[in-house]
Image 1 (cartoon, rainbow, N blue to C red):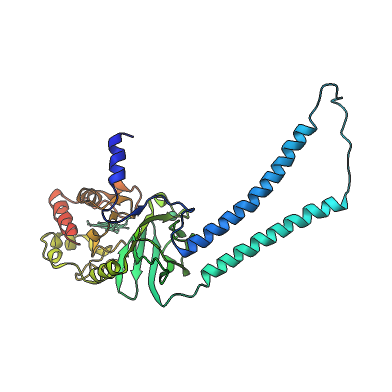
Image 2: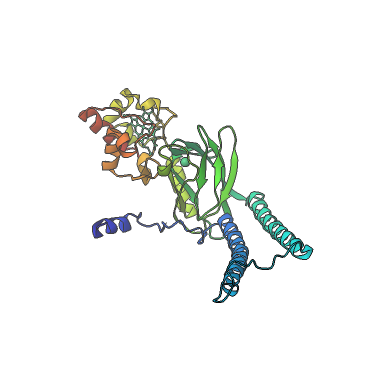
Length: 335
Ligand code: HEC
Ligand SMILES: [Cu+2]
């Protein structure tokens, strides 16, 4: 990779927000992730100790009882049969260890799952699609995609509660620094919550193989100061901005079958199959956090999504050059 690319990567963060780019499970920044890190360390310590004891005994035995010059290589070592004490010890001790591990794990799972929500909680519904995330804020009437905005909460007084669903296959919602993995299962709702302590962008991804573009089913949690979140929410609640509604490209967009898959609030476009485009340009990324949301990427996407994300469920719409220009200028105005 050239120095140039490297610099571009380093600069690819959003101004004004600290990006937690490295999804390090050992640097948790929310209560569930913290609890899970602690138990992971405990399990690592116990299993590490077992490893050291077993491997140490093996190494010691191999060395201590190695074949020495003058030994008779054909002679078997003395055979020992049936020691009740030893048999009992190596049965009972592992059982006790397993009980301890199961017990502490169950306690942590219960403490995360049964945590009572703080007075101030935000409800978010995430619906998995091949290969993007539909995101609803039922109390606000907001529908968006692939980026989950929520308030950050240094003192844990606000938490975001998730309902997780899927419309097609199994997916799995995972933002490593904020909480553990939870499956999205068709015909079932799973629940989880998180309370990011610092504002910033937390990257996550689908963690259950769901088809061709599974590896590009990325997501972002954008944790904001509560006042910034309120501002974001009130912008998102609005229908498409007047500038976009007046855009000449709107007619072209509405004359194409884009509208049978995409919705733009305040217009006749009400498709539900693809991401809601009402405030498309307020998002940082396109195509489930795969591409930075720039005009060039947007244009290339509309021109042929199969080039950017082969196999994705938006077909190449084979637009003419003027149609492509018109539609791009309309979508670009959807802020
Ligand atoms: C058959 C349904 C379908 C049609 C028709 C369709 N799209 Fe899409 N579109 C999708 C799906 C599905 C995605 C999500 C792809 C992914 O990320 O895997 C998508 C994604 C997008 C995105 C990226 C949104 C985001 O937030 O990531 C844009 C922009 C878009 N489509 C614009 C258009 C335009 C413009 C047209 C018409 C020229 C169109 N689409 C026609 C299904 C469709
Ligand atoms: Cu997946």
